[in-house]
Length: 265
Image: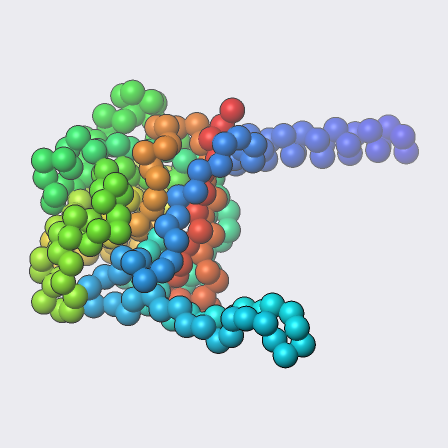
């Protein structure tokens, strides 16, 4: 019996160690908040309902103690948020159906800030991804890929960040910000295996997109996207972990996202 218990203990310890290596997630290190706060300045799509916070009660009750309570309303897609695959792929995963393991993992940053400085409509290319690999090695399987365009520095100035501060249907044609090229989205789904993708602009497709091809390509493979991600300039190209937990809206196509990075020691 003693020998059996020792053998079981050995297998349990080994399984935990292997699981930790495979997940490649470190829970110790410097924490970086990658989410913007939600308030009246939060950036939403020109046609979407903005964030509203209303007071139900704030002050001292008739019993003599302080109490505050508020109510909020907003569109699913605005501020730092998650796009679920069902957003552009019928019958695919809704927010609540995305496995938590797909939202937690090792992260990498592909930095295209230089390219975007001279081209507001820049789209991240396959060559950009390959250039990252030349410097850092092959994009690992099961990684969360973050794209840094540098546009985060302008948030929440809608004119600088989106290309227009106008709202309504007509404003959509005036959007100018970087995104992911459909060819690069397709290359990722065919040649690499990522858990999720995110970036520091309002959409994974660039502002002038009318077909939203990158959304459609990624979401058909149930790869969710994080949009309006903050503070990517604080992350290295690799060696950090990501935890990205959205509001669990049953049947939702997206929702507010609290996302953090933990820098590996």
